[in-house]
Each structure stands twice: as structure tokens, then as C-alpha cells.
Image 1 (cartoon, helix red, strand yellow):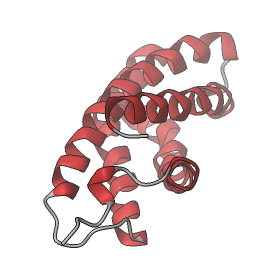
Image 2 (cartoon, rainbow, N blue to C red):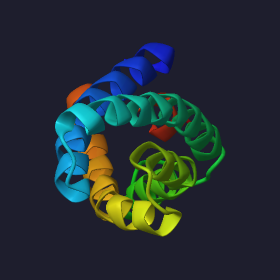
Image 3 (cartoon, rainbow, N blue to C red):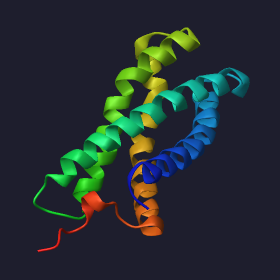
Length: 143
């Protein structure tokens, strides 16, 4: 599976799993009900889905131009950490506003996600590539 179809399957499955984890995690971390964090998780997931599609498109554009092909542990780690750090720029102000807390408190609430989501992203990407194969951008070019 390649191209837009691959990206859409990737992002949809990634975010549906993430939505479930986020709703419960936000409720536990903020001490609020899932009825409060559920809509926030949906909004976060919507933002994350859009950013995930854009980020992966840019990453594969960059990856296609690299001399070294394949997805090493280092490349996967850079991908996962880069995605999460760039996403946080959008999410911390949203969490603060939604829950009526300071940016610092929102950062603390989001800190667990800042640590856990890159691990989830790394594991998800590894499993996704094992199930669906590597995208063309990561395959060796014929000589």
C-alpha cells in the first residue's frame, strides 16, 4: 500500500487508538470526567490527524532525498519525537483554555503524553510497517 491510501489508513488507525487512550488519560491526569475530556480528546485527535498527515508527508519528502534508505531505530525515533514536539506547540494552549488552567498546568497534564506518545508512535510505526510494508520513500532505489 502506497501514497495517499497508505497515509489515510495510517493516520485513521493511529488516531482512533490515540483517541481512546487520550480520553482516559486526560480524565485521569486532570481529575475531570471523561465527558469533559472526551470532546477535548476529539479536538486534539482532529488536530493531530491533520498535523500527522502534513508531518508524514514532509517527513517522506525529506526521507526520499536521503542517501541512506530504510527506517533505522534512529530514524524512527527522530520521526516519533519530532512529531510529538511539534504537536505540543498546538496542544498546550488548547488544553489550558479547555480545562481553564494555566499553560504550566496544561504542560504538566500533557507531560505524560509528551513522554508516552513518542513511545506509542514508535511502536505503532514499527507495527504498521511490519503489517503493510515500507513506503516507497524508504525502499532502496534500483541501480
